[in-house]
Every structure is written in C-alpha cells, then in structure tokens.
Image 1 (cartoon, protein in one colour):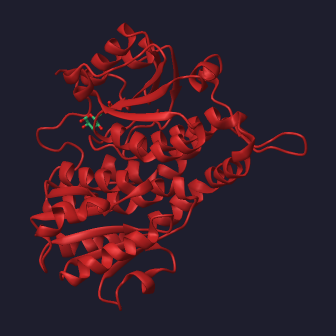
Image 2 (cartoon, protein in one colour; image 1 turned 90 degrees about the horizontal axis):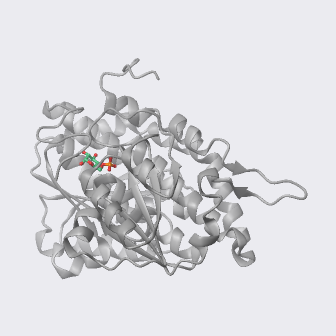
Image 3 (tube, helix red, strand yellow; image 1 turned 120 degrees about the vertical axis):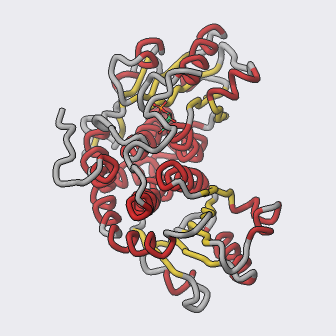
Length: 374
Ligand code: G6P
C-alpha cells in the first residue's frame, strides 16, 4: 500500500484530500444500483449470516472511543430511523466502568479504526461474556477487534497515518449508513427513502471533491483564528456529531481549546460564555433542524457572538443576519449523509490552524494513533 505523502506536506493533509477515493473504496461492490426487476440495495458480505439476528435484536449498542464514537453518533439518527430498533451509544471506557447492562438479545457494534484500542477491546470482552452478538467495524483486517467479533464490516479506507483520524471517520459513517440500509432492507414503507440515500451514496465522492475546494477559504479562516484561546462548535440532529468531531480535531492537533456543543443545550450553560470575542462555529445546513438553528444564530447574534455559520450552498444570505456573520457554504446531500460533507471544512480548519501555529500535525504531543493500554 502506498503510504508516502505524495504531493502533500503532511499525512493528515493527504488523508483529508483523499476522501473522495477512500469513500469510493469503502462503497465498492457494496451498493447495488438496481434495475428493472432488482431494487437498489446494499450488500455487506461480512454480515450476511447475521442480519436476521440483528433485525430481531432488542437493542443495537454502538461502542467506541474518540473519533470512532463520534462516527457512530453521526449515524445514530439514520440507524434509528431505518432499523426501528433502540440504538444506544456507549463510550467504551464508560460502559466498562459502569458495567452497564448488555443482554443476550443485544447486538453490540464495536467501532474502531485500528481495531486495537484497549478500552474498546475490554468492552468487547465484556459484551462477549454477556452473550451479545458482537459486530466489528474496523479499518484493519486481522486486528484484535476484527478477530474477536462474531462478524464484521471492514471500512477499507486505506492506511491512516495521521494521529488525528479523518478519512476513517467519513468511511465509518458511510459504513454505518449502509448498515442502517441493510437492516431496514425488508421494510417496504421506507424503500423510497433508502433509494434516495443509495443515490446519495453513489454521488458522495463527487460532493466531497466539491467541499474540498474550500481549502483556501479554511486557510484564511485559520489565519483569522490563529491567536484565539478557544473555539466553540454548535450542532444538532445529524450534525451534533459534527460539532463534537470538529472540536476534537481542533483540540487534538492545533492544541486550541475547543468544545462541541449540542445547540439544544445552548440555554443550559454555554450561552454564558458568549461575547464579542469568542469565535463560534454554528452548523446550520438544511435538514429538519434548520429553523431551530436559525433561531440559535439569532440568539447568539443578539449576544454579540462572533459567528462563523456553516450553511448549505445558496443559504449564506438567509443565515448571516444581514451579512453580519462569516459563512462557509457546503454542498447539499441527503440529510443523513451531510455529516460526511460538513466535517471536511472543519478538518481543513484544524489542519491549517495547526500548521500556522507551528505544531506537529501528524504527531500531536501526548497522543497516540492507537491507545493499546488503559
Ligand atoms: C486515539 C486516537 C484517535 C482515535 C481513538 C480511537 O485516541 O488518537 O484518533 O479516534 O484513539 O481509536 P480507534 O482506533 O479505536 O478508532
């Protein structure tokens, strides 16, 4: 496998820019285009003997750490919608600390880029002891999580070297969206929705190419933010995870304090932080939560918040409160796939902030790519 930096200066930069290709590889052979007598569908070979059990589970419990946890959170709404099953999210260490309830009737899904994270592995042992069906979603064939789970889906994103995960995140979301499609495959009422998502998946690499064109714009934004102490990121719905993951990227590599905030919680604390100095990214792309996010923007603006609004292409005028906020316009995709698009400008921002601040972007201090000890 080609793991040199090619024309790029850093692995993180290369991995951000190769997402159109890594996503294509993730989906290769797994999407069925459909035809006159065949419906559009997905094929996840690794699950074929277990899908019926998964469909009959009492709950689906997603377990991971860091970026892998955030990817599962991004896919949660579509998993709930298409499966009709209760979907629970667990941070691996917290599940183990609490010895939280896991039952024989549960499907547990272990999400891990490396497949070797100690906390996730310990949670896997725990789920195996409790008799749950264990599914692995990893980027590493032959890893411990791939070996010890009952069945698995490889994300096939290619080797990721940068400590901050980028292309694995988007591939994980796509795999979990495909998992949602596969689980819901026998539900006639959602067929139209599923077909729209499959069409959206086919077109996703092109849309990622388009959003990568924001590179220079995000570098300019990084120049503006270079000396800031802190950056907040507000999201909700499909993009709550984008807020968490965007903030995680910024803090991991640029060493700037950053918090992802669920916009619905704004009035329960975060609003006290807002003034004319603190920069705030608000994710307000078109989906069922759009009007709520418009109201969040109004409220932050009324408190003189320094806003950078991420919006759908063509929406800049309607979200910028009379042109007073900076905007970042992104291409529109099917709502459940929008997190794949929306994270890209934030990955680029984190990358440029780090380089401009003079820190090591591929090997941030104190962090490891794979945390194999507890
Ligand atoms: C470390 C890495 C993160 C990663 C997390 C989970 O903290 O620095 O980038 O998201 O581990 O890793 P995994 O390999 O399980 O996805």
